[in-house]
Image (cartoon, rainbow, N blue to C red; front, side):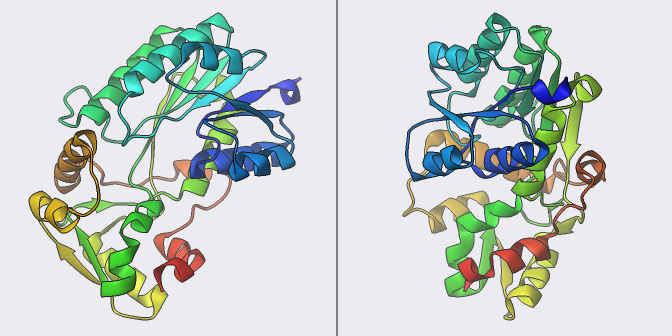
Length: 292
């Protein structure tokens, strides 16, 4: 009976969504993927046997149509793009209209009522909106991902430096593939996890000075961490277009990181997936070519 569940994955061409799809297929579940457009990435999903539908999370009709015949759904809206509250409200309404049995919601560890980041506070409000549906919902609150280092790889590759406004802040980086496996396991066990808020951490906590040592050892050359103020960070990256939404969010999550909001670790990923989560060294070993 359980194998008849059909799961909708949003953010299906992203890292966590893609990993969730691979895990669900390996588990034998039928999957529908909501993508923004047909392209090479969506074609690869179709080739795997995934039912692909095109739609926009900011369009209620698109979401409701994508949910027809679905049992549980993964909601993943990009944190650095405005609109999460509108998308969440549409997702909640569509879920009610289609009688979903469960929702897995991608939130963030800094989501809270008093958050200064608009995006973080909006994610907290979004959690409350989904709770109001009465549908069993699991809110995932991961810390920073390993993948964030890909956004600053030019500095690592060209200057052997990590320039970030995180001071001595500490966190245990989460691998997006591990997050995807968590999504798959929870989406197919919603009765066990429904109603919970799950903070997700990687296996080891560091500050960026310690991370730079691990990265140096993995890449075989010295990588130095250069902590800067938030103003210096955006001045250094002034050539990259940054929206007001992005600047406001990064400014306050940097403060949160320094103030310990992102700190901590636990064994939830291994408990849920049955697999030891990837370490920072694992991530850089797997992606070393991108940093050379």
